[in-house]
Amino acid sequence: MEACWDGTVVHMHETKQYGQGPMLVFTRGEWEAFLGGVAGGGGGSSTFRG
Image 1 (cartoon, rainbow, N blue to C red):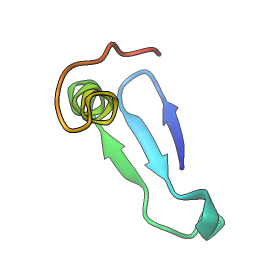
Image 2 (image 1 turned 135 degrees about the vertical axis):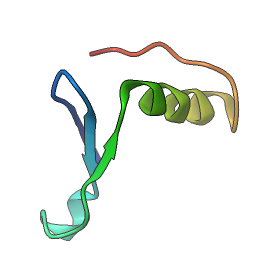
Image 3 (image 1 turned 90 degrees about the vertical axis):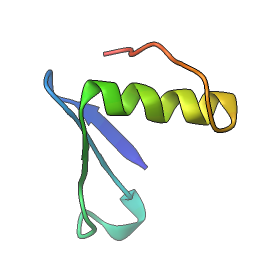
């Protein structure tokens, strides 16, 4: 997976698809919730690092 913060949203895609797969776009709040879920095994909070 590859993720990039452009100053407004986070763009994420699967690198195994050589740029041909779908691009997922997350707001800052959505991205922080995602990171919190990953870090906490399904819940919690995380700090955005951008």
